[in-house]
Length: 134
Image (cartoon, rainbow, N blue to C red; front, side, top):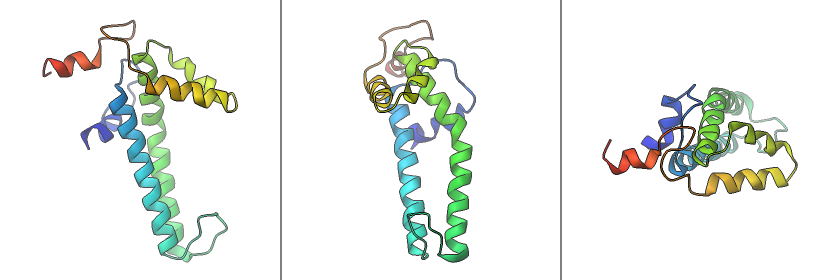
């Protein structure tokens, strides 16, 4: 759970590096919250296709999900940039995601590969601090 919430503790921190574990645990948190919101929306009579219905409770679930997504935008951007930094790439590489289909696969590859061992131009290796018990 600590790894899932770490990007919120580092809310506006765009510098430095983030391990794969931090990035993917944050992505898992996003998925869990989204699935729970969709299940709650359907449970209170809403629909998953956005066609409305379900009354005030489905609207409340949608509103809470919207607040979560807006509040998570900056941390998700920051952790993605720090993850790119861990692979010794500039945060500007996020823009490749704007290229249809291919860009998403390139970013996925960058997020999956192991980070640079040892320090790089963006800071010390985040795994080294954990190995020393810091």
